[in-house]
Amino acid sequence: MNLTKQHRGMARALAVAVVASVGLAGCATYADEFAGVNSRLDRLDTQVQNAAQNAESANQSAQQANRRLDQIEGRVQQLESSRGRVPRG
Image (cartoon, rainbow, N blue to C red; front, top):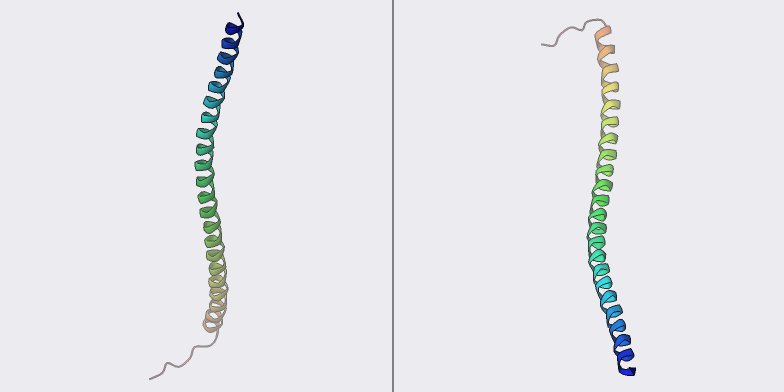
């Protein structure tokens, strides 16, 4: 009888070890998946930051172009409203 109790104890320990190893193997799989997802999120975050910087740069360039156009427009209106000049030549 003592041998049977010992076998049951060993069987329980073995079952716990098997369940634990399967559980840990599952965790390792999920850890790999999470690492892959996190890596992809990091790449996307970098792309979004680069796109935001490019958009900001384009916005600044557009504002400079608009200021330059405003300056030119004022000069064109001034020339159009002034008396006609005698053409050269």
